[in-house]
Length: 141
Image (tube, rainbow, N blue to C red; front, side, top):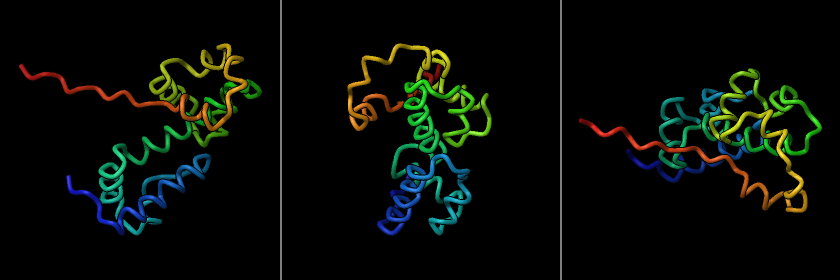
């Protein structure tokens, strides 16, 4: 796949920064592509080539990352956390959370997080960032 040129990288970085900043807002690929002055297809391909994940994947990782922090605090219900991070479907949120974190939002919220209370937020963010599991393609017979 062709690597994005420098002008595209600047626009992609702005779009990524917007996702990081406005993760709780309704964002879609078409709107982000418009902001980057690209077609949705070109934007998605260029974003993946530059950052190794799709725009939607990056946005969901940010949302789940923030959801983990809110669930650790324990003051909001899972539904409230879902809405607070910009997800509109509890089912989609729960399945994405489970896929990225390895346990349901309710189970994560119920865990004892007192050991991480003294850890600065910037350090906790690095160690608790959800990581997508990349599966190797199945071998061909």
